[in-house]
Image 1 (cartoon, rainbow, N blue to C red):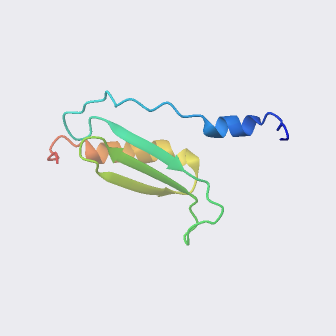
Image 2 (cartoon, one colour):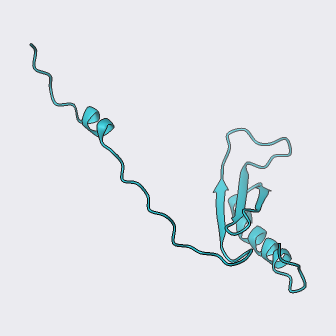
Length: 94
């Protein structure tokens, strides 16, 4: 029987990953906790030219907002405008 050399890749591929624990974040209403993600730059622009997508998800209601952006530096203004609209005092919460 031929002795095989040590293969680091084989050892790592057989290793088990540690499981993630359950989240500790508890929200009591809509817009208490928002998850945001900026995706891009895509190699192929959309028909109108933008290459970035900003997604925001409300942790409580799981409502999703998607914004299409041309550049990364638009994220801050986009978030500020979204916050003004969603947090209006007379707005009825979901």
